[in-house]
Image (tube, helix red, strand yellow):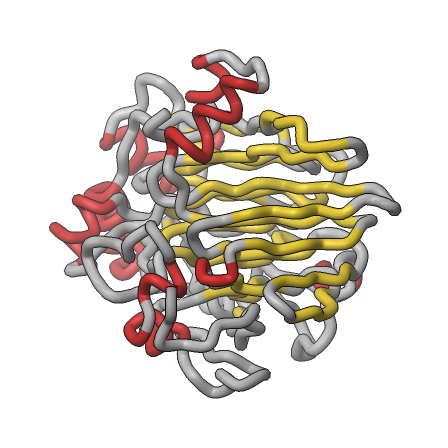
Length: 360
C-alpha cells in the first residue's frame, strides 16, 4: 500500500523535566548522553502532549512534528489501530524516570473524570517497568482497603501516606500497571521506564511544587487535595508482575510485561549471536534498556544507544535487532490477537494473563 509519507524509523526530540525528585541516574547508571547539568527527573521519549510534542531530529522528515505526520498518514503511522477516539494525538507517551528521591504522592484522572473535571479528551493510565532499584526500594500504589474520602483527606494533610496507602517492594525487572485514578508514588532509589496514555494531567498532595520544591501556601495545598479527592478511584490495587514469557527461538526471549486497552509493553532479549525479528501492524516504540544495538528495517540500518528510543511506523512492518540485546517494545495492542492468544498458547492461564492489566 502506498503511503503519503515515506516512512523510516523516527528519532525524535525528547523534552526533559528537571523536577526536584530527579538526580543523575539516567546519565550515571544508564549512560544517557546530552542531558543538561543538574538533576534530571524525566526524558519524554515519545510525546504528543500539547505544547511538548516531539519533532523528528534527523533524516528526510527532520523538523516535522509527530502530530503533523499522524495527520498526514494515520494508517502509515498507526496501521490498523486508530488514534484515540477523543482527538488527533499519537496515543502513547513514554519516559525514562529517575526517582533518586521520592516522587510526589499523586494521581492522574481516568478517561471519564478527565472529560468531566479537566476538560481533557482522555485521562492517563500508566505502567512502570523497573530498570533499577536500590535494596529495600518501595512504591506506594493504591489505597488500603477501607479507606474512605475523609480518612484519606486527613492522612494527606498530615502526610501520613502509609496510614492509607499500600507500600509495595520494588525490584528490577518487574512491572506494575496503574489505572487512571490510582493514588501512587515511587522512589527513592528507583529508575523506571514508563508507558502511558498521552496526557499531562495530574493532581498531587504535597506541600511543595514538583518543579522546584517551592512551598505552597496552605490554601493552595488544601485546594489541590480536594481536586485530587474528586478524581481519586479507591478500587484499583495493582501489584508488580514479573511478566509472562512467550517462546521465540533459541537465545531470544519475549516477555509481555503489561497490557490493557491503551498500551502493551514487552521486553525482548537476545544473546550475542542471536537476532530479534519482530513483525508488527501498528506503531512500535522501541527503547533500548541494554547495551547499544544495531537496528534494521526496510532498507534502513542504524545504531540505538542505551536509554534511547526509535518510533517505528506501522508501514515498516518488521524490525530486526542484532544481539546481544535488551530492548522494550510499546504499542497499542489488540488484546485478543497480541496478548491472549500467544500467552494462552504458551501455557499461561487466564488469571495470570488478566493480572497484566485491564480488559484481559
